[in-house]
Length: 98
Image (cartoon, rainbow, N blue to C red):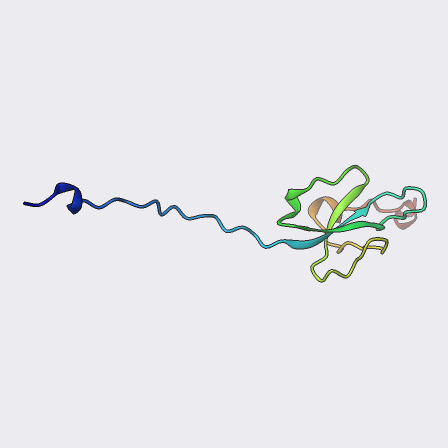
């Protein structure tokens, strides 16, 4: 006699677990001068899984610092990448002859 319970198999949950991104070095820096802290002044370094994990306060931004080169108090210079919105600039009046 065969036991029906011993011949059945159970399905296992094989749902893939999404990969967690490895934390990266970021710096919180000033985008507007405040007192003696000039534009680019690094407030603090931090490790985040992504830049979306933290929303900087007004007058500050996050910058990727993969090598960890910018300690607090240093000056961070963000990479200059142009987008369609920033690539267009007004032509000065002196260049147009007016």
